[in-house]
Image (cartoon, rainbow, N blue to C red; front, side, top):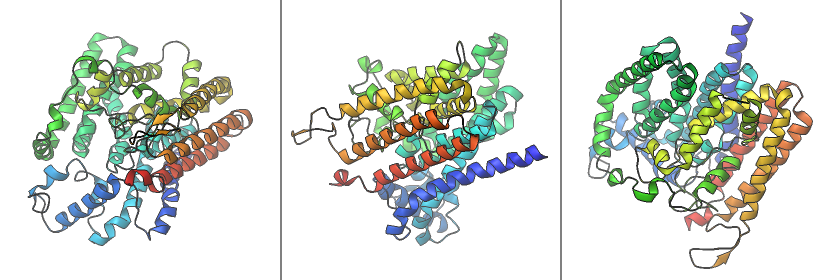
Length: 484
């Protein structure tokens, strides 16, 4: 009875922690804007207007056809990608239209809360200590990826439910819970069909890494794959009533016909791409849509980001060093790193489209958070490895920070330092934040690593809050150059 009570208490805790962290991050901007959350770019010009317009259409009874978008068209076809299958959108329907802009920050806080809640349930299965499952869950929710794609508000719907989908996939493989997985597949496919393609690719990698290599039984593997395929297919078929109009409209997009060819299959067009991935994994991630030091026109909207608050990749490096020999989590993350480095493999998450997207990075981020949680719960044994990881974070952070001092030319053909063609204030903020958190990481390793668990939890909470506030500041105050 006591364990059940503590389990429920932890679920409530992690939900409230994430909700409050985001709320505390956004409240200062709400004070200046009288409750309406003004962010950057697409959030202002697409996300809020789409919410309001679709909200009005539904309340007016226009469930199938919208006369007010372009020259008129299917409501599902026009808005399926953004919000119509989102449970968060439907929460706005009981409210009058003028309330919708005021609801946006609280809907986002709810999304963060569910990100953390479902990530906690997933990580809890893979680590020994509930407390550090909570830490890992918060690292996932407030990762650099979450902050980077905040401008695309609807992406967070997928981030919120992905850990739950992964939980049900494991139950399908281990306990043959077919119905739950099929229904969740239908929901995920409808929620966002673009992300669903990437998630399907990840599930294949996940199965190979976590199960196939472990059991090495060809008959069992074949049986697992058949059950997973037909369970998933049944879910997709269930969702077709919603997906068919959406896919019909999407097929008219010219970008779908453009696929990678030639040398682009094995080498990124942007020479700084791999450095950009490293930077946005080790240091605070760039806000998607803003040009910075290493992201050029092609990658600036790609959603590159895998930074974990405070720990960065230190916990991941420590996990690799501590768990010597073969390990399923190491195998999984290594495969993901190879996919990220090779263009044709990376493009599998976007149906081989030639446009560069890193919008699947949130999936390995969950595994990185799990690894970090595992290291922290064994920190008496892993402290030395965590220190090695922190040193590598320091070397990369300082190296990239120094790169910012290299001369570069602006679009006006003028020389500049800071390596940024635009938004150099954002770059300064990211470097300053990363260096401050780096110092805090070394302080943690030197002074607090062996303190009671609650100390690590409080420090992690503080780091998540600081990360969220910093990315909120970047997306609200440090975007002046982009608007000129």
